[in-house]
Every structure is written in structure tokens, then in C-alpha cells.
Length: 454
Image 1 (cartoon, rainbow, N blue to C red):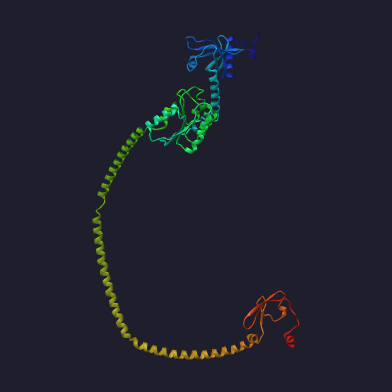
Image 2: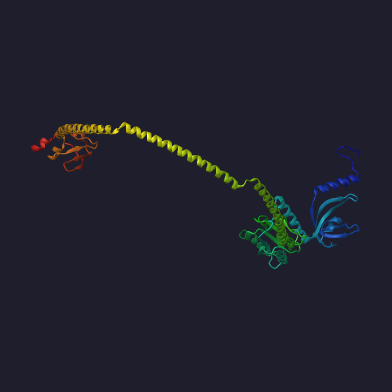
């Protein structure tokens, strides 16, 4: 048969190799459940067996570096779940599964669910180390979620009594396995905000995968991840791993290890404090000695205050003496000027000038009084004439005879009915008072004379 680049002829080795690579790329990881048969364990330590069901079977190989971690004792007739990758043994062209883990069928289903949940939560970032919170170095209050009758709480309390007796511990009792465990664990997490602890310890002793399954539930894992306080997960023994271990801020291999991780050693702390106190004392003494030396140096450079005060006292005394002498000279000068002024004043003789001024003042007072009397008489006569003129034009005499003065709303005196309008308010002044009236109507043509004729 002719060959071409599109249809090359392969050797058997090339064919098997390409088939193996294709299978391994397509089936990178598979879970297979079946009954074990034809189990063989050669001196190399590898396991070779077949998995079969009612209709088919597949060869499997599990190498020594993998089968050492298997807990079950393999044998024909066992129902198991194998996890691995599909491959091809090129030497014989046998289709086979390279097994990485092997478990009994019941436990294998749990392990599969464990791995699936682990991948789901990891994809959501719940395992991200960037979100992990550090534990406080010296906590004061610890909340422990565990069974009150289990060995874990006794181990934890024993460690804390030995390492840090003053630690405040609040036990939140909860079932750690069985049907009630999930609800009680969730309720325990819901109680944490009321307690406000520094650290939350989620713990229990060891057991099978089924015993620890409450700590692999998605609801419990999410409650642990959402806890507002730093969490420590110590579930089972060192070889046990739970989903809560991945979402917690810190994982401890055992309850006792968690207790030692959380609480510092009081004795070690005391030693550290004593060492720091000694170091601080040495530093303080060294600084004190340095300050004392500096003070002595400054004291030697600083002049004697008594000498300074004495020098300033002398300067003050000298200034006082100079000031007193200048004051006396000034006083004597002023005394001489006063004496000279007194002599000049006596020589001028102001007594006669004073008498002349008094005579002139008396004459001026007489003339002023006469002129004031004349001016007063003139103004009195003028006022009397003006009074008579005002009396002649004043409405008061007319009012006293029974007449009245009427003003409209604008304050103008009403002398004609043309100045009034119906509804307008007027004010009428009489001899002894005034009254306000409202104009209801006007009667043109009717005068006071007409009224008297009636």
C-alpha cells in the first residue's frame, strides 16, 4: 500500500504510544467502581488487578509509591472505588487504569464527594491564603466548639491549664458526628457574635472518614469560612484532613497541638518579660549615666548664679546712685526757676489790674441787665399782639359757642361737602373732646342758615 504524508504507516510501537498519549490526555482523572479480581502483588511492591462488573472488566495497576497509603487490605471479591488515569501498556497493548488511590466502595463515595466539594470551594477562593487571618499572640477569650464529653476538650483544657492558666474558655457544646451534628455545629457558629471571642477552636478526636464527615459538609465549611473571628480547625489526628481544615485560618494536626498553638507558654512569656525588663533596665541605667555625665559637664560650663546676681546687684546700686544724684540736680534747678518766677510776679503787681477788671465787670453787668429788661418788654408786647391775632382766627371760641371742627381721613379740615364721600370716616372735634363718625350720605344745598330758619 503506498504511503503519503496524510496517511503514514505506523509501527506497532508508534501506534501504541500515540494511543496511550491520547487516552491519558482524554481521561486525565477518572473514578471507577468495581469488584476486584486477579489481584497480584509481585516482589516489586506494585499491585496488579482487574475491576469488573456484570458486563465488562478493565486491567488496573497501582504502583508501590501509591499503594503504601491505602488503608484497606486488597483482595479478590472486594467492591472498591479507584481513582486514576486511563493509559495503555505499550509492551502488550493492554488498556489499563493507573490507580492513584483505592478505597472501599462506601468510603470511596465519601472521598469522591470530599474531593468534589474541595474543588468547588477552592474555585470560590475559600482556601485562599490571602484571606487567612493571623491569630492574636496573647488571646484572652477562646470559644471551643466540640463535644463536651469527648477527649478533645479534655486534652485542650489540660494543655491550657499547663501553659496559660488565666485564659478564659467558653465551651459551645455540639455533637461532632451523627444526624444532629450539622444543625448543632451551625447553631454553635451562630452563637459566636454574642460571645465575641478572640479565637474560635473547632475540634474533635480522630475517627473514620464517616465519623469526621460532619466537618466535610458544605454548610459547616461555609459557616466556618464566614466566621467573623480567627478560626483554628483541629479535626482528628495528623493524617486526617477535613474541609474545615482548608477554610479555617489555621489548621492544627491534633487538638493538643491546636491548644499549644493558640495559647502562649506563660512561663516562657515570663522569661521573655524578665529578659526585656533586664534589657530595659540596662538601657535606662546607661541613658541615666549618660545624662548624669552631660549634666556634670553642663554644670562645669555654667557660671555660678551667685556671682552673676552679685554683679547685677552692683550694677543696680551704681545706677540707683546716679539716678538719685540726677534727680537732686533737677530738683534744685526747678527750685531756682520757681524763686525767679515768684520775684517777677511780685514785680508786675497784678493787684491793681485785678481791681480795675472787677470795676469794668460790674459796669458791664449793669448795662446787660438794663438791655435785657428792654428786650423783654418789647418781646412781651409783640407776643400780646400776636396772641390777639391768633385768638381772632382761632376756631376755639367758635367751638365754645357750640360749633365743631371736622377732619376727613386725610387730616384735612372739611369746609365743603364736596370734600366728603359716602362711607368715609371723619373726626369731629368739640370743646371737651372728639368723636369719629362715618358718612352715610350728603345733602347739597342745605346750609346752617336753613337749619336755623326751621
